[in-house]
Length: 155
Image (cartoon, rainbow, N blue to C red; front, top):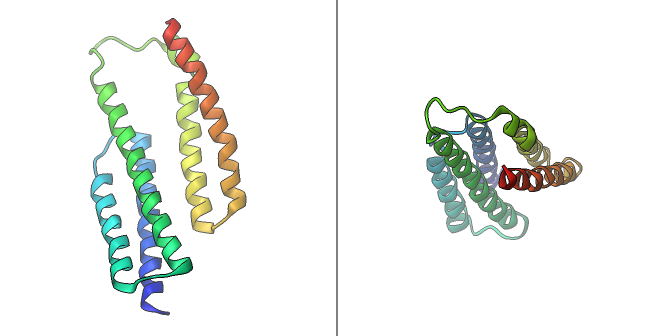
C-alpha cells in the first residue's frame, strides 16, 4: 500500500469519527469538541495535498473530505446554537407542548439524525443508492420547516 493510500484511509477514518461526534452533538444539542476536530482534519487534508501532490481520484477525494468536514462543523455549530437558545429560555416557563407538537420539531430532529446516519453510511459504503434516500428525508424536513415557520408566525 502506498503512503498516500494510508494517509487517505486515515483521513476517511477521521471523517467517520467527526461524523459520529457531530451526530452525538446534534442529539445532545451541545458539546464543543467538533471545532478542534475540524481543524485537525483540515490540517490533515492540507498535509496530504502539500506532501503527496495527489492527482485525479485521490485529489478529488481529499477535496471532498475537506468540504464534508466543513459542513459537519457547521452542523456542530447549529447544535451549539440550539443549546444556547434553549439555555436562554426563561427558567420555569415551559415551552407550550402543543406548539412543539404542531411544529413537529421532534419529528424534524429524528429525520435530521436519520439523514446524518444515512449520509455517513453512504459515505462509508460508498453507496449512491443509500445517498439517494437522503433527498426524500430532506424534502420532508423542508416541508416540516415551512409549516413550522407559518405556525410560529401565527402563534
